[in-house]
Image 1 (cartoon, helix red, strand yellow):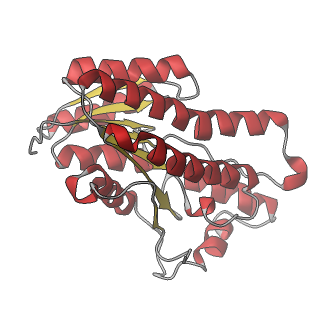
Image 2 (tube, one colour; image 1 turned 45 degrees about the vertical axis):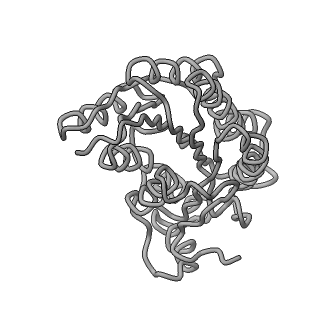
Length: 259
């Protein structure tokens, strides 16, 4: 692996899309802080990067806890010798029929999907300022943050919120030399999607796989996404070729949503 002298932190990096992003950024030459709620999976991903010749550390953090997010960013800055990119990737996606939404579900989803992004933005800005340079903030949105998806009301609305945060933060932080963008996956082969499929299929009284088939009908490229497809998009957002882009939410969904 090469070394570009820069440091990136990825939340929710213990599996799925987050893992693919961490591995891709390591390939791109970043030293990577692998952050996850599951300390064991974070450790495995960091070890994978280190064994391949990269540089990584593993950190536990609950992104809904502001202090834990700030601590993770500061640890990355100190242990890896800098801080240049944060990828606010961590998220959850429970299925929710409108009439079954509870305060507990709303709080849980918004605490992770929305507050976790806010805390990540704040922590990154603090680190960039302390180092005297700008940086890149990259947030996880979704095609469900462009078009409301059935049975995913709370998840979809949380991702619409991330789009709004991304646009506002881009305007507010530009004078610091900080860009803020988002990536918007569609249906990706990850443990999170498997759980969505299970819940949607069960709600319809159908076998596992039914939910995936129904959602996949709308994919123009006629295949589900691999985590590496999304990681390629994030690689672009983290690299120099996107320096003149800010406030954007890039769809990487195989053609599910057209604007």
